[in-house]
Length: 254
Length: 267
Ligand SMILES: Nc1ncnc2c1ncn2[C@@H]1O[C@H](COP(=O)(O)OP(=O)(O)OP(=O)(O)O)[C@@H](O)[C@H]1O
Ligand SMILES: [Mg+2]
Image 1: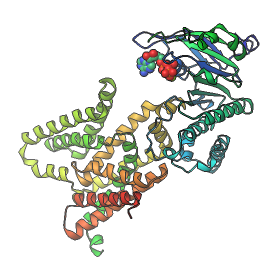
Image 2: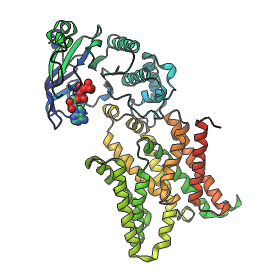
Image 3: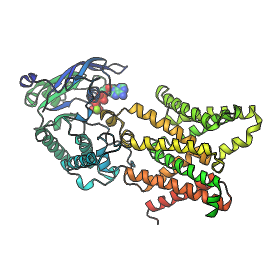
Image 4: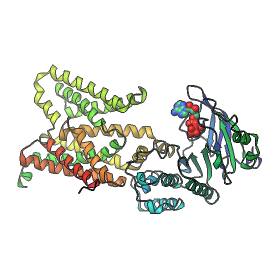
């Protein structure tokens, strides 16, 4: 574990979490603190429980055992969801004919639209503009979301995830199916959000090729937490060598 | 035009029709995008049983139909979730139950055949003043609730998981939209009848979706199509002495066709 960060209170702490989907264990006894400013990459093979792990942190699934604390609060009591940004793995699987403009998709993360005062509306407009600027999509704001390319859609989803000025951003395999150039742009963008806007980032991927220079922490999941440490240590670790050698990092369930 | 002002029934029909058309059109956009277009069809069949029971018990058919429709819509929701049925399967089950009950009730008491026919085929020109007020009030409630929760509904419809994570109570909104749909369908039944009510929900929204490049436009266009259908439909029905329900749906369908051709660039 990272000893320098251990003194600080974690932004999110996953404590002894297990999850059973009714057919068998999916996650076993995961304990994973996430600290303010971390750029954590959760890696693991297909079906290793990465998405399940995120869903538990986000309150979409209830853990069978253990607990999750967000910003010092138990998950059930936590209510400050605008401080959490999330891009689901299936984000781009939406109805392609859905009649929402890019701008409207970004606005979805903002609070209820009921009887907005002029001041609120102006604040919302500028938050949306800022989010679109950060991802470089301002000129597409009026384009229908289904008429953007996959990479452009992902950028819009990032804009939606950051429009409230979150403290932490969860991304579940955001670069599946986008080309290498767009991927490069993505990691630079995430790096910028992490270092310049101070957003803690949790990035799930099963592609360790992208475990790159921006990442500060690596958690390797395969039902259990197989490895957790700094990126530098990870590259020298046995786990990493095993993965490169195509060793035992294969799903327990297949 | 003079005729319009001298005939109170025409004014009442128009007034109620306009309010109900807007409610149907606004809600229709959400129902279509939720792939719930058939719910209008299904619930209208259950309202048939409600109307039959109301006539049978000499109670206000609209009120009984309303209760039936709300209960049935919640039943459909439960069936979908707990019984693991596909949405359209649940709708088919509940709507056939409604039709079955309606037929039995209709046979049990033979003397309301005409009244029941009016409900089947629409009787907007025969709408009672009290029903006009009730329709206007309910339609206003539907529109206010949908427009007030517009962004939440949009977000939920687009991406349920993200909506949940952004703190939206998705279950509560599902229930709300289901109840609103059931109320709207009963209102729509007043305008075009049980057999055509789903047209009032589906056609304006489908037409709007042909041309809309954003959500607001979809809602506005859908409302516009609904309004023009009811107004022009009623006028044509009056002038040509043809059934209002049929004319309203025909006008709506023509606009849909027009929008479709516009989108395809054929016009
Ligand atoms: N909806 C579900 N219901 C029941 N079991 C599920 C469900 N989703 C996933 N699982 C099970 O949980 C396990 C972990 O799935 P999860 O989606 O968390 O894996 P993952 O690491 O995200 O995989 P991938 O890299 O393919 O996204 C899988 O083995 C699967 O069998
Ligand atoms: Mg996954």
